Each structure stands twice: as structure tokens, then as C-alpha cells.
Amino acid sequence: MILRDVRKNKFKTGLIITLFLTFIAIFIYFLSVWLFKDVYLAVIVGIVFSVLSTIFSYYNSDKLVLLLNGARPASKKEDLELNDILEGLCLATGLPKPKLYIMEDSSMNAFATGRNPEHSVICVTTGLLNNLEKYELEGVLAHELSHIKNYDILLSTIATIMVGFVIIISDLFLRFSFRGRDNDNKSNGILMIIGLIFIILSPIFGQILQLALSRNREYLADASAIEITRNKDGLISALRKLSSINTPLRTANKATASMFIVNPFSSKKAKDSLFSTHPNTENRINALLNIK
Image (cartoon, rainbow, N blue to C red; front, side, top):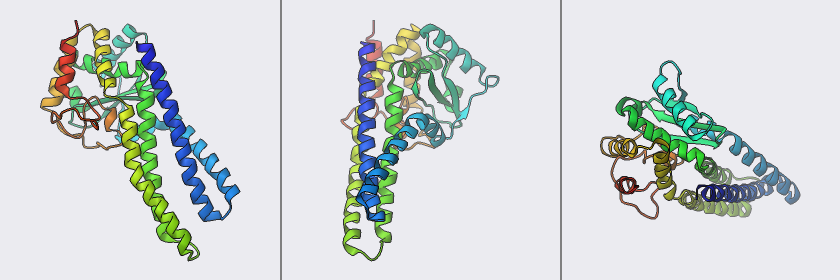
């Protein structure tokens, strides 16, 4: 079952990258036609830029996510217990030890990022370290390790960066259109229409990508964490704390929200809906309690 899910995640990632590459190529094509008045040059610029931006996103998406969240590398001396717990879990799973990062925030949360187990990162907040017991922290780290093992990180990280990129270029498109060029009102008007279309489609495109990161990924990571720790009480207790006494993350943003173990915007126990990025916490706890 796990191998099948890994294959599905790799397929989804390939599909997302292809859609993104096509989307960027079309955008750059229209922009180049407007700037250079040369269709052939526009095609070349569009293809080259889209390929380079996709490659950059693939290899640097984890660094960008850490930068967006203001994370710093963990210290082996100051964060000894965190390092020891993760090393023990990695020995149990046979996974290489991910890099550890810390977010200076009183909110309790965590996420994993990277493109594969060999190039992976787990990031936790200081609030998580200060408020969870060792066995609870072990459950959270095992959950994040499960995302790495199941290749959820590849899909979520690539999607996160690409959604943000689409939103940025949509805004640039409109800025270019308002500046105008050679007083060509007709071409400016067409460009503005295209820009507005991009602005409208960007959040929709982003939501589709987030829905591709099915909430079932969280349920699967929870169940996989229990297989690793052989103790469901730790993760259950951690989830209860995260949903009851948690506060919103200061650096939370919509682009990276789906990557966290719980919704970073609110501690409210929201009901599951079609557009939820996270499953309801009580439902997750009930699913864990039903594991024999």
C-alpha cells in the first residue's frame, strides 16, 4: 500500500511540474510578444524561462520554504533531546537523518520539506519543544518522518513554491499592462485582460494543487507514525494539545499552510470540508484510537 502511494505521489508531482512548466511558458510567451514584438523570440524565451524556473523550484524549494518561515538550523548542543529522538526514529525506519530546523515561535507546529529522503528537512517551532513531553514530540517527529518516507514532501513542497510563483507572475502581468508600451491601447487592453484572467485563475489553480495534497496524506502519516513508534498515545496526546491550547503561527502564509501538521492559522477544530487543507483533529484522533 505504501509503495502504491509513493508511486501516486511521484506521478502527481510530475503532473504538477508539467502543468506549471506549461503555465509559465504561456505567460512568458505573451509577455515576450508584447515586449519584443517577435513571436519566434517569444517562444524561445518562454520555453527557456519555464524550464529554468522549474529546475530552480525543484532543487531549491525546501530552502525557499524555510526562508519563508524564518527557520534556523537546530543546534546539536542546545537541541540535544530533539536530535536524539530523531536519530532513534531514523534507526527504526532505516531513513537517513533529515536536517533539523527551528522556528522561533510560541505556536506548536511542525512540517517536513525537501525533494526526497536524502534531501529532507524537519522543522519544529520552539513552542512545540517547550510544551510537549518527550513521548509526544516523538509522535510528531514520527509523523513528519512518515511524510518523508511516503514522498509527501516532494509533492507538497513543489506545489507550495509553484503556487506562490504563479501568484507573483500574475501580479507582475497586471503591473506590466498598466505601465503601457508605445501607447498601443489595443495590445495593452489585451494584456490587461490576460493579466486579469491569470489573477482570477491563480487562487483556483492554487486550491486545486492543495486538494491534490489529499487530506488522506495526513491520516496515512498518522498511521505510519504509529507503526514507527509502536505507541499511539504520544501522537494522540500531541494532537490534542495542538488543537486545544495552540495559537496561530506568526509567519503563517497560505502558500505553506498545507505543509504543517495542523492548520497554522487557527487552533479552532474546524470541520472537514472540500477545501480544507487539514482533516479535523478529532477525526484524526478517532482514526488513531481505532488502530488495533
